Image (cartoon, rainbow, N blue to C red; front, side, top):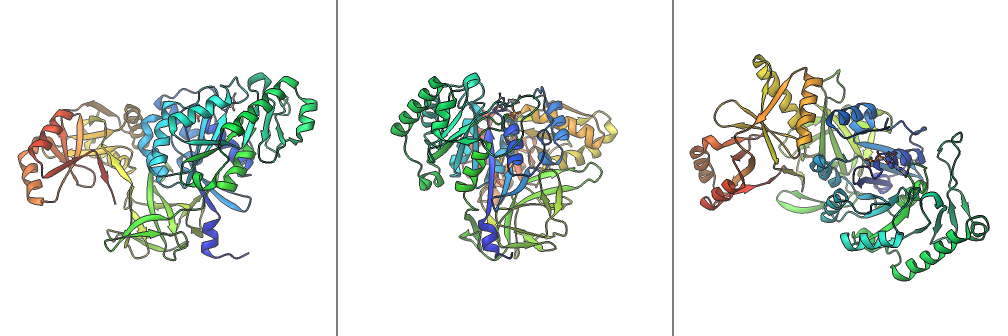
Length: 532
Ligand code: GDP
């Protein structure tokens, strides 16, 4: 069975799952992998149980989940399609990482808790998807618990997200009375059979029956409610329109219970039916704006994530490269736009439980490129080093701390450790122009805790984070290098450089930034830096 690179790319479906913590993303991920045949037994993606989201737990979750989470991408083949599921960290402190991961996705599954509807984090993540016009499939989870009225839930999506909803199924009650859902297109019924403890929750084909049989066997009141709700929904809500979905204006809706493996097959077939193949990406070549299509010949892609120390025994670093065009072959030599050459001898492919060496990969695929720190988040890689993809920003940190080693002799070691963590792009490391302080920046407080824990676990160092003299960092740029130079010279006490040597203004507060901006109209103080 040989197919062309363009055909291979066309059967890729690269998607992410977005949700508010606790809505069931982990459970759904696990069950999607089960439904897709990528893993055999539930409980292998995550060892869950009672868990609180403290930093140490987070570390433990990462450890327990092992490669599948560290790897950030899970690949499985189903229905003659290759699915690449990109993992996004759920905690809000990791939104920047999530943001970047979403740049590598062609569609997203939005998981809602049926009892809660749209929660704050769902909204934030949704906004990122909207900015990038990422089409969204909605999965309303936990129908086995008391849920909000389904019409109310869909109204909320419409109101809060300005997103038209088109249910593909309609649920028969919820909680104790939950009986299944009607397939609104096929007109039959997917039955929810409560499994006994011995049977456990095993993936398998859905239990589909005719509506007559459903009426004959299920609670009459539940069935009446279902018919009434389904009628109301089809009157009040628009039919599914694939074009509107692709443009990000409409979401198809599937109901289910990830924990009971109900609705998961239906979600997977909805993904297979509607999730788009790798989409064209905007890029720049020789100063011209161009569009890179998945069928284009030259291999090109961008790095959206770096993970250091994936294997504690080797200080390796893996750059996650999302391919956008061409047929990648193991051993290929790709170049960054700064003309750094990377020979990719051992590209990693991430199956649910394993990593493997990828011999070939196509647009839509994510390969792991082991490297020693040459690659950074936002780098574009291509055969000639002439393609630059757009739009992976760094965000200014909202928390700055001065880092020092507990043992003063270990300063150099600590700098190395903080540098390699900063290379992952989640945290920042700034060096002030005066003195030898290490100033770390993070978007959320949890990241500071995680950093301390990782420095201890991976570098065997104790680090102390203290209040810094600054609270705000802004990148400084100017079209006039002399003016920039003059500003830096004049403000040596409140400027420094980031990991890439780019100048930053370290201010006490936002007011100082505003003042500096007013006084220096030729300079730009920015909260994001596009590394492109
Ligand atoms: P995440 O934070 O979004 O990854 O959520 P988890 O997948 O860890 O789920 C949070 C909690 O909800 C866990 O205790 C799950 O067992 C539970 N859960 C997930 N899906 C369902 C579901 O469909 N029904 C019920 N009753 N509980 C669920």
